[in-house]
Image 1 (tube, rainbow, N blue to C red):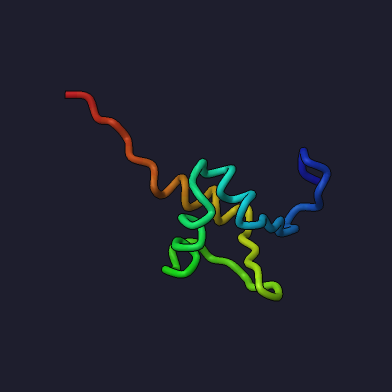
Image 2: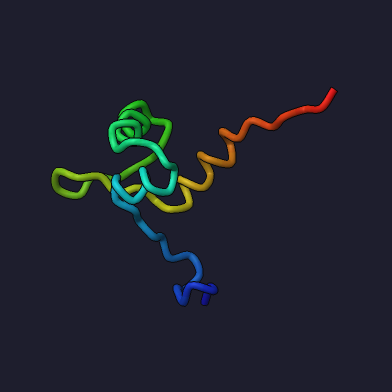
Length: 69
């Protein structure tokens, strides 16, 4: 069990508005990331679900560090 009470290995999916809130961007930006393939998602009916870990991975890989001179 994880700290959140979920079994290890259980995938948690977020809706587009939830992803937008986590990333602090618009829903349209999330849709663009999904359609471009930068953010993996599954389609459920007419909506998308994004694995929570994929959001964290995307943010970690996109981080731009500031180097001191």
